[in-house]
Length: 369
Image 1 (tube, rainbow, N blue to C red):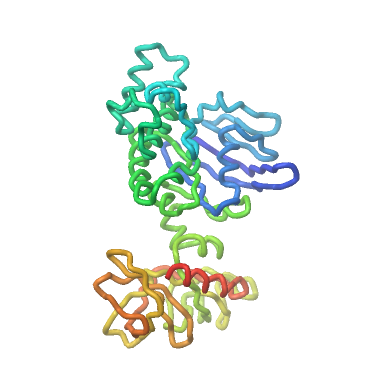
Image 2 (image 1 turned 90 degrees about the vertical axis):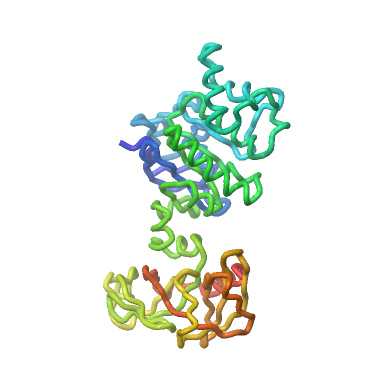
């Protein structure tokens, strides 16, 4: 039985539908994530799970019990759900220890002190309990907020953009630390973020949201290599689309050669096994394009972005089409230079050409550079 289950959940503000027919489940001990652009409804879903919002349709079940549904709305304080807010919401007039102890209303003095000491150790703040929030760094404040949410031993922990106020390097480090803390505490959690690096670093399962709906709920590997639709393919990772022609159900021809694999697309007649001649757009990721000096296939360097261990090159083919390629940084090529490349595509990702939006991908290549 899943610890959390949402079935066909909808929510609206006045007449504006924000969440529509949303369903997913999360097993006990797993870390899930709702990932999507601003305004897609992901924070509203989190608030519905917490009980801060009343759903207009569907059902939310927690540990097998309905907490939101037709004629049912269990208040937030009775759901045993912890929440870490974007701004941490710490009490400035209370010490770190008192902030953590705030939710332990029923605990006796000695028990409360033991639990606070245990959590200070868990989040790496041993000996800091006497300090006030303003005396701590942003990362330390985030840990206090986490400890306070964990104190009552909730069934489920909700995290609303918990790293958005931190710099990039600290976000990366803390996301990994937070995952370890949740694992050590055997806590089931849901993270809401627009940052896919955070999502991939923390979550076991991720739901890509767009306009109030989940486009794909899957493990990170499948979201990247086996996107369910064009939106997921565009949103996750980087890449560009090249036009292709389906040769048969196992092969597609693009400018760079023939790719082999199951062609996950529909032809104009609607059959899964496309017939010869169907036009498609084929996704190529930066890791699909390998720099190879010995290759006869050449592409011109038009942009380069230094990333320490790697360059992200934007390459122009003879047709004028552009590709992205991740290349070890000791291969430092000049703008305008032609370099050898070859394909190393394990997963063919293709969509009908009617779905293509070429200008969108040109913008993405430019932004990546």
